Image (cartoon, rainbow, N blue to C red; front, side):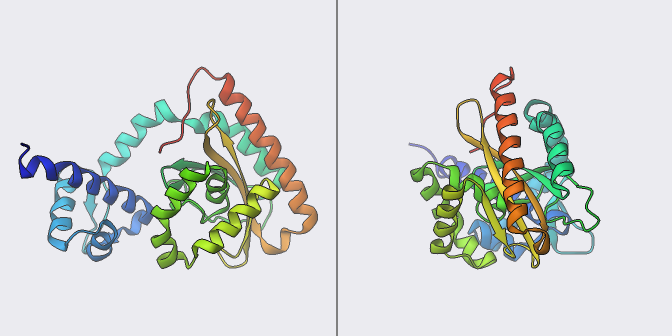
Length: 266
């Protein structure tokens, strides 16, 4: 019969990775013990112990003069090593650069990571009024931004329902998005073939997104373009839809013909 510690350890390992994922969403400002404990649903002492174990391994750091925690140097080093195997950016960058140039606004490459969308690259367009709604490394639940919504809408129904079950509490609390609202957005994206959001993440900003699939046909990532509301006219929406369609078709072809095998991180 397994001991209590052997049963507990896999659960705590999962919680530790949940902490790391959460801190990845907080950026350089980090997160406080109270909000981390609430997110991983553990008592403060257990969360505190896990954080200090992660600090000892270099995965987490405690910010100077603050009771806040952020990702540590080892997380960065591991990311650099993993990028050599999973650097989809190199394949996408020429297409992303052209999308930004032709769209005139900031274009993003967003990768699916389980129930989250991660910004892995961005290119600024030549428009004087530039909109930066994401930074490289930023994480959000699927369905929040245009790129994440495009991915969520593309998932098979059962998988999509499971993701919604996972992210709905955070969407309710942090983003004020009900399940009915998300389902309506999903249905609209499926009907149009692209996502269009306005003022959802940043006031005065609109964004469009379209997903693409890996060699096995699974939704892996998306391209999106963000601009001030005034630039997102009906004619421009039609133009951006054409640009996004062409861009996702090009990267889909490149992924299918590439020797590497790219898959979503579920």
